[in-house]
Length: 338
Length: 177
Image (cartoon, rainbow over all chains, first blue to last red; front, side, top):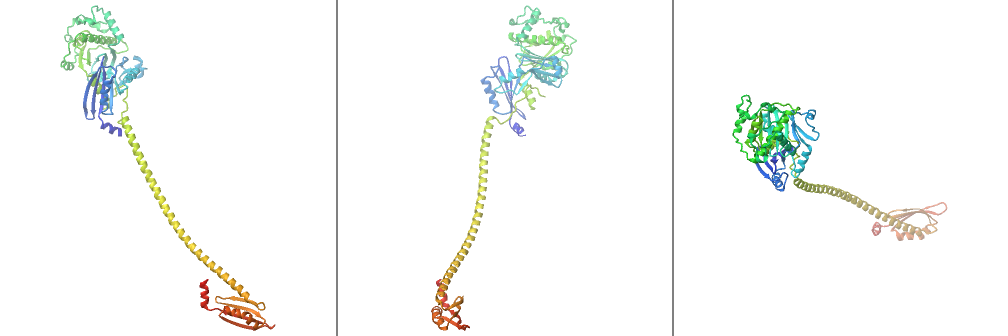
């Protein structure tokens, strides 16, 4: 009772931390029962916690004892699985060293316990109250879409891509991809080599017209030579386009890619391609042909990625810009019942 | 719906600084109240002691009064005893003097001492013996002397001598004592 009175007296300070490749974005929102009082963004040149960042956060922490620090999970070992019970989950992944959360008793997302401890250790000066999975963000950000038809969803961060396939609100496949992971990069490069792209040089940029990505044994090859297809609109049988989303997207014009951006977007494309290939190949997952892809873009991808995914993967791609820090804040608010 | 892997830490407005201040103030208040309670208790016990002492004082005063009364009574008794003792001494002396007065030839059979007089019963060989040897000293002491004689078979005389002193003289004698 007393605690509730005190809670009503003080505003809530929501500190949302998003770690980027070489910097950390801190988004702080002061909320009361009536709504948001104020918000502030600040970026710091560190991937951990430096003195400047600590001082900045402490300035706001002092305003209220009810402060909550939210973080986006950066664990390498994390993902989402299309089951919820322990027995079923064991079929997909050994979760003995993992923490997992069930969503609506239909699917679950998990992360390594050691990574949680590591994160808590890094942020011990300010503490951590909420640690959110990128899949939770996909789930809330595309809430209007995942309840619908089968589609693939992706959350693109600077270093990570989280891919999830949903149909009627149920997850069919989920994978967390690390762009910096050497093993994955090797895998991508190896795959590229297999696909006899002798002229492919990441440093010199990529000529999209000459790109030809195929994976033996995956269902993509069933569509024949994709270079024959000028645009997706020309194909009659693909009538599953999301017109509403297209309209929304037309308002946001994507940037032209410069060389560095495109290299990164190519990596992203490769990772998404590999992930889709895994989804099709892995017998444990209920694979269906994917036609639509929804991307929540947290970094500002170029139009090349969209075009490339559309042309090479034969997907209808819709890109929504996402402010990851604000989304984390929304999740924290939902947790606190604000 | 809960999305977070971890639970938020318990939040309280009682930060260590606030806790310190609250602890300090509560300790101060506790000390003040305990001092106040102690003083109240002491005041109460003091009042009780005071009341008890007043009661004791009253009791003692009463007992002093009683003792004073007893002392007065004892003093009275003492003075009375002294008076009796003195009277006894006087009487004893009087008796001794009386018996000194009685010559050997006269035998006293009974003597009655009165407040203002003396009645002697006895046997005398003759009136002359009595008149010369006993009556003369009696007259020197008593102002009024009356004697009656009764003859006995053997020729001796039984006598009753009634002697009185004046009342005024008697009072003077008493006041002197």
